Length: 241
Image (tube, rainbow, N blue to C red; front, side, top):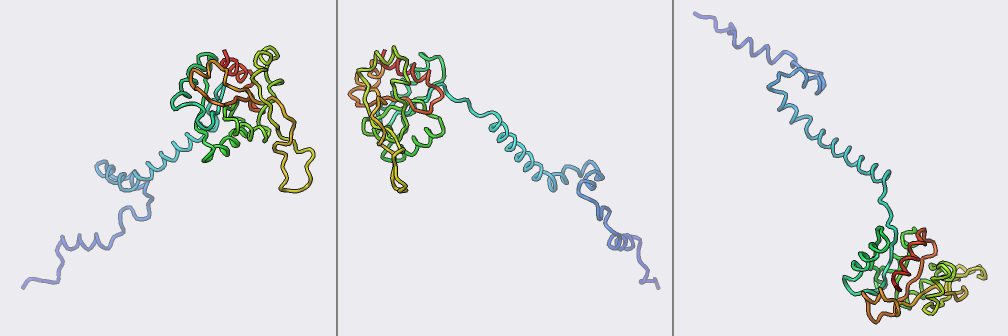
């Protein structure tokens, strides 16, 4: 009678495989990858390394983009003109921008997205405070409000004497900002308490302006903290030529 208790060679191999430690037990994924036969490497890489590698590449690309943007900020235009409350008809801001760029030979932005019925005033205040705007074109009521905050330069001082002499007839005085006489009341403000000065120029006689707008009561003024005063002067001169 054959001995049925004796294991076959195949059974012994199966038991040895089950009881022996895995070939790569305790090894890191990278070490396992390096030891795998070439035909298994691709599948192992896709399963264990592909997603982390893609995530790392994306993270590096984003960091590089942020660093480059911080190190190389966008160059400021030679002139930024804010046009308030549709002082220009639709599409005319782009035409004025193009013609002014040709005149100045430099980058110009004529931005007519300032609507005071929405967030136009706060947008103006923020951009003026951060020295992004050089000139403002606005209807008289809005211009008066902005002048009262002290946002404009006295044109008698901001324009060359010859240019001011030619345009003096078109200037308009507004009361500016003066907090020198205020009490300690936190609700008190210096808006509109300054002396009346020629902060605005009426555009009703400005030839270049009327190529783009008609019947407007708009005024133009130079922002007090502009670093582009020479270009602002040239822009005003261009509007009236």
